[in-house]
Amino acid sequence: MAQPTTATEHPPTEPAPTDRFAGSGLAADIPFLLARARALSMHNAHAALEPLGLKVRAFSVLWLVCEGLEPSQRELSAFLSLDPSQIVALVDELERRGAVTRQADPRDRRQRIIRPTPAGQRLLRKAHALVETGNDRSLSALTPDERRTLGELLGKLVLGG
Image (cartoon, rainbow, N blue to C red; front, side, top):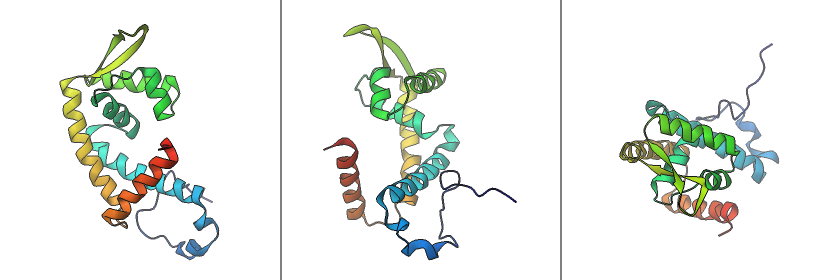
């Protein structure tokens, strides 16, 4: 007998035959809904980024680096809630692609700041356009006002603002 897959492996993109569970208590549970929404949005973002050979985590690092914030690897780790070793691997990948460089931090020579290259800026523009398409797919059930409200509420929940 085949093992069932989890929502994070293959999130639904169309109504599933399990729609009868939509009225269940679990279907109204906020952590469950957040997990399902995350799975759906990650699936669509990964699919959108596939032509560029990027994953969402590398895209997130590149986005932060390209904003001119000159983040250190430690800051990236803290903000993205990733282990420092994961950040090292992501920066290594982006560096191999010629998208970023590591430089000594003038504020603290023990740390490295990550800066974008012109190629990294171009890659981000392409990736961002593709991710927007994935986001549109993930959020297609919401109006523009609902999307804005969702973004504000999630920002408040996650960033405390």
